[in-house]
Length: 338
Length: 152
Image 1 (cartoon, rainbow over the protein chains, first blue to last red):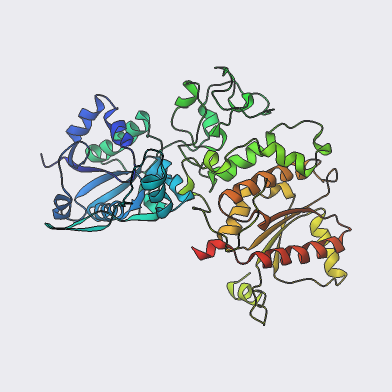
Image 2: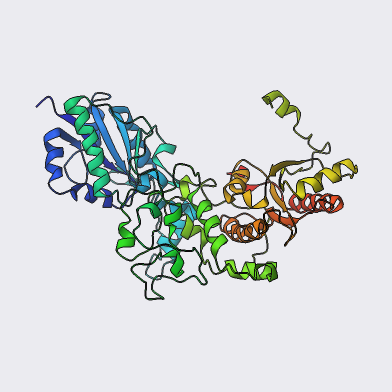
């Protein structure tokens, strides 16, 4: 079985959904088994870090790394797997853009630890016990990975060859990629250029089958507040849908399920900042009419206040990969806007 | 512009060692840039620590430009456009006004003082308003201190 290639799959700061998505490709997973030896996949097969350390460098053809980098273990494993692999695939939104864990960048380690271990209504931590990196016990030292203040994407930590966004990447994207690798292994077909994004280069609106007319919305609603028309463009119904600033490739599955796009595929190729792009689009169409000239600055501010949480809405999956990347702290406190 | 020239063009830090903010000023081609020009040819005195970037319309200033300015260490960003109802493209400045309003909310969520971003209307005949706006904004940003992104 020497003609099989070696593949590794690893998870950093993620939820495990990406691993499940790989299993979701149905019978194609058998094809993967025929083509490749899975040498490391903590969620599915037994394997230890020392096994990976013992492998020769570049002996793994491709590593699919899902999850963001938010602690020392994530970083160590990413660097180790990079050393052992020919191709590193940033698999899923967390690895590509930080994903949902990336929203941790609105605070820091202390903020998260304090909240989780002392401030939650359900926490009963009278002794104020916090996880320690090193704990001394009578049987010796035990250690935990060090959590970082800032969540990073995989490519902010190591060199990445391919990107496959999605929360999780959809079956068609995974199959497309495995097909390319299979052709390369069996027939010697060329691989995509380094840095390739395994997704579409268009925006999601291109894939979305809903009827689109004039982009104009009078009021912003949450999806639960109105009966959503199955046929009509989400944004035109007043629901914030990030489709217009999100990369296509997922097949607009959320829209098919009558839910707005939240942007897990990240920005399109021409844009650096998905949130900035959506902010610009939404602000321009929100309740536009011929009375624009009569509005004053306060009216505009009031109108924009309808967007309750711009950061959380526009950067739901991409905060660590955005231009600003994380929350900052002004040296001088300022008066909050009303 | 070569990198040598770019370094040469760097405004000199105040000799007393006090904080001198780095300001980015986006001017629309039709009104504000002409206004800035008028301020210049009229020899109106103002601080020199700002850099003007000319865009065809204030609405050309993508929120991404502003975010990039802050990410690269700008202490304040000023966007100048035509007065309402005076836009060369009829409604560009109305779009700008909306985007900047929302962008200020976003900047505040990022932890920035939203007053680091300001929108003003300066017409081609308002050289004095250009001078006044720069002077005032410079004072406001000076009071705030340096862009916190450099602290991280």
